[in-house]
Image (cartoon, rainbow, N blue to C red):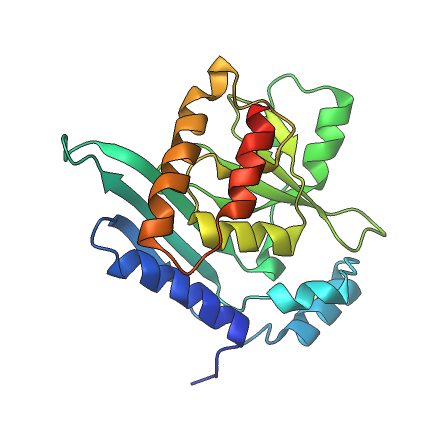
Length: 232
């Protein structure tokens, strides 16, 4: 068996945190196979540069995952109404090589402007919510000459937003939030005090109240600061 990297082990720890938490109900728990064909980060990045013209910053190799996919969908029941959730989330990470090979996301647009059409031609999905079907999609923007792709988030109903995160930063925040629905808005230029973000705001407040007890190994203060900024 191929030895896992230290970074890959941190992601298996995320799955284990969810599995072992008695308050969390898992509806999906998936660890894909290691992609032995594409191989390690050096080989994958070299092939992306040679065959796809995508020369990524070597610093991104530290966040390279060889799993074909890594996913979880979960919810925490309401103590008073066990069939209802107080908070829920999902993530579904795809291998960076298959992300680059993915299809453009122009089908998500209705009557797009030329600028939107160009943007979505350059975006590729790397994290989604296919199990729950809430329609959230996180995307990387691949453009010639750009070595550190932008991260974008689209909910359809609330539009698309560039996030104040790079790819490694997104993955780090995802490990802490476990994919709590709407966490990406902590890093978007929106006001979570607006009525349209009421559910998102409630989820963030519950997450930051409950997670320090459930998953005490993580530091939630940066997320608290982000929430305060979005409410300010």
